[in-house]
Length: 174
Image 1 (cartoon, rainbow, N blue to C red):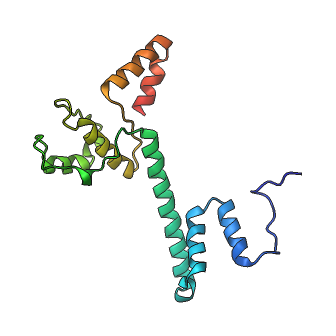
Image 2: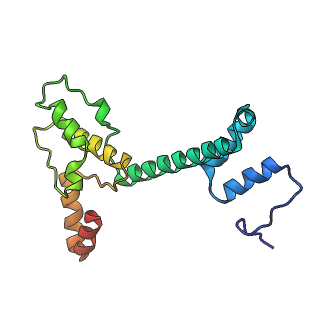
Image 3: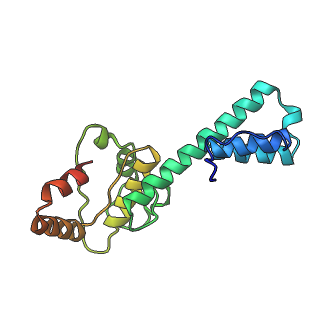
């Protein structure tokens, strides 16, 4: 007979720490389990009060989940480049101003439901800038979709032929 991991009883044949780690993993508290495992290997528990230790475990779980959410948003956005605002080179003469990029990085245009069009000559880094802003949006919890114009128009053309244009537009809008 198969045992359900979520309803299987906790057995007392293991030591308390192993049981705790097993329960944390079964409840999908992976960040907390990792912090607890690290604390068992070191001297952290002896130097902390119970409430401080619990606070540390919860903070680690929170960080783990936040990082997982950012990774998921970034993966789903399908960025062309791993570009970040901090890595933009302003020394190259492309007509790019640091002040303007810092204002765009606040993502106020997203909060105001405004569009952003990045134009310029071929090879000037438009896609790179779009990916950098997209990564910033993912870090702040926004669902992001990356596509260059030919890819986007091609997808819309295929959707129109298939008769799923409305569905595709709603997907892009989300």
